[in-house]
Amino acid sequence: RRMVKWNAAVLEKLLLNVVTHRQSTAPKNIGYLRQFSMHNSDESSLREKPKRRMSEMSDSLLNEISDAVKFEPYEPRVARKSIRTSTCVTSIGPEASEELMCYVSRIAATYRHVHFHNFEHASHVTMSANKLMKKVCARNWGSSRNTEKAELKKKRDRDREEQVQAFFRTFGISSDPLAQFAVVFAALVHDADHLGVPNDQVIKEKPSFAAKYENKSVAEQNSICVAWEILMEPEYSNLRNCMFSTDDEKQRFKQLLIHMIIATDIADRVRMQKEKRRWKKAFDTIGEWDTEWAGKSDEELAGIDVSFRATAVLEQLMLASDISHTMQHWITYSKWNERLFKERMTAYIEDRAETDPREGWYESEIGFFDFYIIPLAKRLKDCGVFGSAGDEYLGYALKNREEWIEKGQEITESYDKWAEKQLEKSLKRTESN
Image (cartoon, rainbow, N blue to C red; front, side):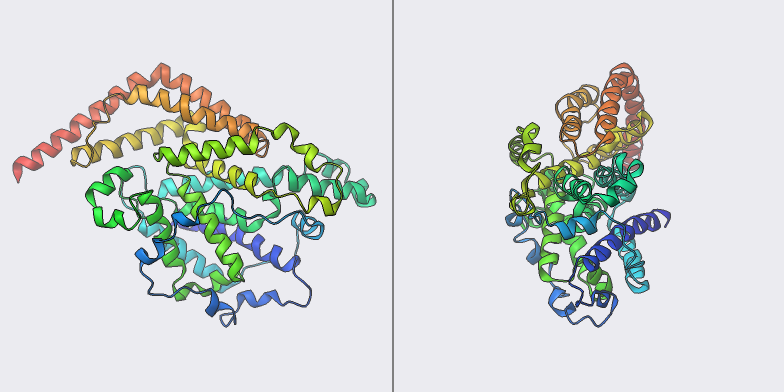
């Protein structure tokens, strides 16, 4: 219950930003407070058929993956509003707030009692995604906003410079509350209904189920469908009204959700190669990025598309959040590494895995650091969006690798002892039956 409340509070704060931004940037003659009404006239157009089956929902999921989710171009009025705190809305409303709490509770119930891919893991990923997103949004200010506040108010050119830098140095993400909310929402639901085994095993155990998802990113697609099906139920109408006020907003939120969760399937080598190529294309010339927008007029800035880079950054944010324990304090890393081993070992004992995880666990962790974790941390740092978090994550990744090399063999021996006890228990249960 504590984790449910914490996750709901995180999402509610982000959702309030969505509603506030929508109202503050909308034409004055539009009454956006209707978002909180049970009788919103647009609700019928936004609601999916309540009895829509998961298989029907999943048919087009992978087809909705593209090189980029559309991000709006720079627009001075929107940029100005997005970087200033507005008091036009102070709450998402009691009905929507209660529905959000209920929704998070429903999502928590979809997580199974497995060692690693459980609701605590989802909460940890949510916390990490929210932290990184805060770093993105905090990058706008620097020290000048505090030390030169009076000057900024007097000089319009300095105010505009702040707006432009805030937008382009975060590729529009800091000006996009819906994207911020969607990423953290995705973090919460990304492993919903996870079976505690990798996709290859799910395909073997449930061929008909996996076939609905074309045997690709099965667990990830299923999590999306589970989360979306619940969200579309009639009792969450007020929550949906806050999340998206138009069909376009709803479709964009859905695209972001799909992109972020599918990105976490790091076992799909074909998809991972595409992701690496997209990142290379987006950031090989990042050193020249400032020259593309610095000194340009508002009309010229409006013609610069940030969508490709923004999508690439958010995918990296999601990837880093999913394995954030590897780039945090050693105690956190050790805790989740042990849990992952226990989940894999439990699957092996239950004949749900062909490979004994005790074989090569020490060596595989070093390889994971060298070929995935550290390169990912370097990307977080090099893109320049995450501020001090880029250095922090890379620093912890390097330290954890060193400490694993030093202590990992002893740790894996303790894992082996635990595994032997579990095998003995399993054998006794088999004999008694």
